[in-house]
Length: 318
Image (cartoon, rainbow, N blue to C red; front, top):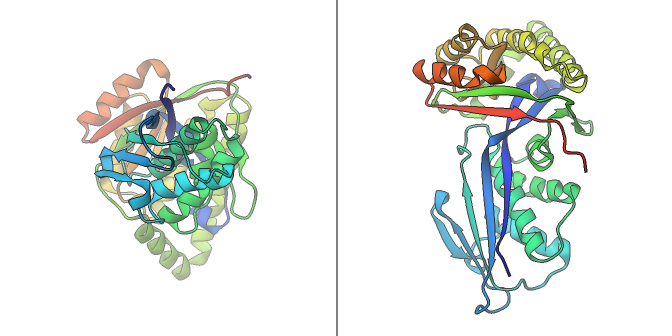
């Protein structure tokens, strides 16, 4: 039996950081240039139920039976077994690799889970539909994030932009045209929880000001949804610039992020902003595809430790 290989993309927040915590909408998009990969190979000499796991990026090499139940890889596999009603899998080896930076806001955990769930269910001869892949990935995401929003598992599973507002069903955004972005990584680690708590404290001290900022960000997310769905991605540039200004006023940008944002704009980007919690991590720029390599190079020269070019594409027609 040939090996089953599946990959899944990363993701990044395009609009709505921080404001999403206060009931405003956010948009996330897939990052197809970085991916997690899962390869399942049959072991004809192994006993039923013997699943050997190799995950070199996290220094893991062990049998499934020897892993704690709360291990995310183990949870992804066991989720598939329960979903399909399989008591014992045929003996196999699962190898997991990824080019997605860990703890960088790029959805590494969700991508690994999606790749594993799809590869393992296909190995068992019962490939799961997207909605079940997303649901099982969400269960694994609880290990990473406690109470995840559902953005990561949805955007990674469907590899399409998503529009999210707390308390409402996540909407898939289908763009009829492609658009290109460059992601610049400051290389600075910034715990999401700390930035979120700082914004919450500032909101408590000055609720009227921050509610006004959140309202503006929510309106920008709504305008971005219309631009994506109507095939007018060029309109996203100015919206990104305005969103970044709001995030600066919230106090979650940094000199390094502002420098990379300004570098991208001066190099010809249509718009740019920080992405994620802020204080470090990544920024993102909307660019014309033909100048994306030049803007990526400009970001590297300006101090980015990594630059990723990614394109959001129209959905495949089945």
